[in-house]
Length: 364
Image (tube, rainbow, N blue to C red; front, side, top):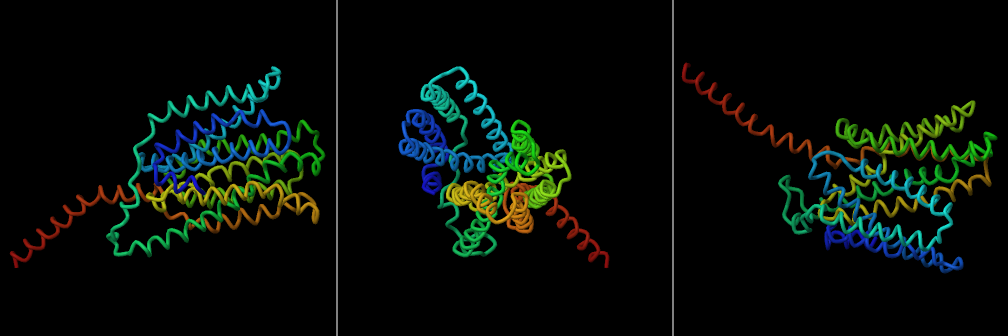
């Protein structure tokens, strides 16, 4: 919540590399922890730095979308997923080689600092500040009224992010346990449940941007959430292992494009406050991701695990219904550019029609 306003004040070109450097220089701290308290403190410091980087990166992605005039947010989130896979492989490799955790994290941190500094040169210039929206818009709406509408929409986007990321968090922690405890799969087979979900989510994010450009962000959120609801329904009601794996794949594929569209819509709702709006949506979304496993765990004390997943179905259906909130984004930017390009042709048509009328009047 601090990083958002800071990003709007200083610009993403400052905060993104600064956040990357802070993440790199604090990554080794958890490796030095010697008890739960020091580990918690180290993770708190690193988490604050990571939050700064996360919010500023998403805010900068909004600027990149504006420059392109088309959706690219899902592609960024896809590379984030790929990075998570590479990090897991690197962690497994260093652990297998017997390297000290602090030393391994320090090496990764140095690499992260190098990447952050190298990427700083390629970042776009700062977007216009709050003064860019100080004047009254051409449509006659006052800035105060427009700001109130934006704040309400951002709150709704944050609630949708909470629901979507709660579903993601539940899948992260409970997909393998469902396969093992409910379906009776071995531990090795059960692990593929989360792998299937994560792989489908990565593939979906790689493919989502072209579909968002063609059909619009609301369609991605609405149809994606509906697909996720169908997927988790198949997990609950599926007759066999193949159906459950298919269900987790559909669940991941459906959810894959939802969060990127919500973050993008938050940033485009008010470009001068992109950082603050993204931080609000991301902040409540991460609450959902952390709460998801706990909520499902609490429900398992009341009902069976597969019955607890009915909550995820309800959340996905609610998200699909609420997709109409996504009224801003690159699709509207593209529409505005198209309308601007059409204006000269419209002017020519109007002028030609006027000349014809004048000629007809002269003949009469």
